[in-house]
Length: 204
Image (cartoon, rainbow, N blue to C red; front, side, top):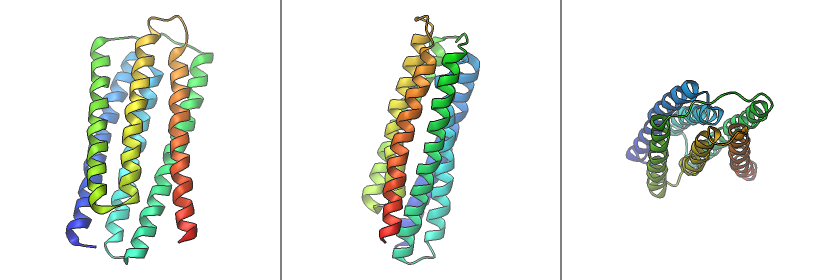
């Protein structure tokens, strides 16, 4: 494993950390300002992605001093932890969605907020492409997990934006329903990743 390879992985994870944290702050602002559960849940999802990148950075940095086999095991372990973190976040989204349906609140729609959230979809798409490009060079399960999560987040954010837009037009707690859907999708994908990496760790 070359020094350039290690630096590329770490730099990619740092890029993901900085971008995800910026997206978290932006969506948190929109979610709190508009009182939209779907956007707020999406913000927490980005916070979880930030944590995942921190785990990835620690894993890549530690792998520098390990053999190839131990490095692969460490990356599989990091992917497993990332999957567990996202799964817990997904369960939280679903719970929040049920709670919002039981106790609906007024959501303040704004074109400005909608545009800001729409732009984050493009950012996440770019992140997924970057992760995929670097993963083709380095073949890392961690980068693969981050890439899949980024593309999944594009769909999640699109669903959150749809829920945000429809809530003010439909006299129904659709914001809560979208929160539940986001939670189920995020948790299902994360559990799949965690199981795959757990099998990899056991069989290695």
